[in-house]
Image (cartoon, rainbow, N blue to C red):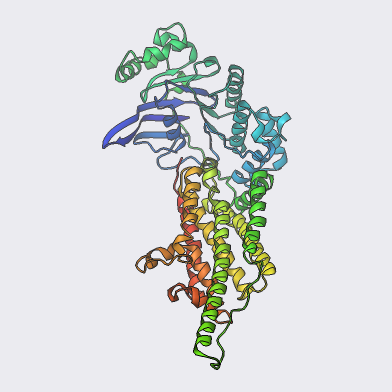
Length: 562
């Protein structure tokens, strides 16, 4: 039994308290199918989220099988919540989607055969013949069936559906409502469906009408026209606007005992024990990383873009170093010739050093900037692009640490491939580039990881992928001018901006490993002393950037944005 007793939910609007739900008292017996109907904006979805535990009630009590939900929340295995939006990845098939949902929400010890369980659920929602079809080609009605299948993996005793029939044609709407009705026949299961449609009310056991956040009717569908004194249900919405919400509320409280079902009346309830079926964080991590690589391998657009950057960007760098890096001229140990000849030679040496130093500095910075661009593409949309799916899966018991861990593992492999290929390709094509190749590979890996991590943090903090992509582009755009590698920064700005510029630390670290060699004078000829930071300092700053990005990503995903 699900019971709400005088539940209210209020928000602050310009310091004024606005009640979206006001003193809602509802009782729903087991094995019942209830519709929550009402005009747009009347609080239907808000009420459903209160029941689910997504929104916390301002006052009142909610009990479920004798448990006070203010003290003991519904477990992830007890409740299924089907939102309005699609909660599946386009590149996966129906079978894969349900299979991964099962792996993320139910431990292996709680199911005898994963294959059989998946097949049973798919057949239950009427998608057996389409199990190998990808989500992106499904119709609206088929996607709604899939959304239901993803929630049935835990066999929940409370199934909450939010506008799952919205936008469907009449036939598909009737099929979905019929499916929900059949699901409610499961022993002890309650199914609640939020809808603005007044069609097919006869398929429901209970109709709940909301108006301006207040319950104005709860009873069987065959009595609703009698209560509102109308000939058809379609006349109810226009009628509601003819009276104030408080009047409707008073009228319902006066007459409700004549309409409410007998088994909705309060009775003694026995608390049920709850079994936690959620798999371990390690099991969820394995499922997430497997799913991420499968989606990546099937995303042709992303594969082509990654291939173009990995191949094309190193080629761009090499173009500027095709003539090689010639050794700079040096001054003779003894002065010979006339003063004019010595002066001309000094000028020639200086020009040679500046030319060589500029080429080396430019090649290094070009590598670094292109890697930061690749890095932003790696993770700018990684979390924000699937935010709704993540929020739904977390509601179903997904550990945030497992989710972030899977992102780190996936992106680390991308970063390793991108940075190593950039470093090796450039070194092969420009073998005269000074400095230790191994150390340079480490620096390139760190700067790619740093920018990938920072953009992952941005993706975790932003509400949508468009915001995240825009912020990441701005961040990469400021890397070159604020690094001080091309134009010298004002002395007062350097200590403020440089700590935040990953490209500066990678560029400075690369130059630092060259200053002790033959090209040292050339490096010093084109860079200020303050720009040449020790290698260990640069590595430390890049490591700080990596950790900061991971922390931001974790903090952003830990905070609900549903």
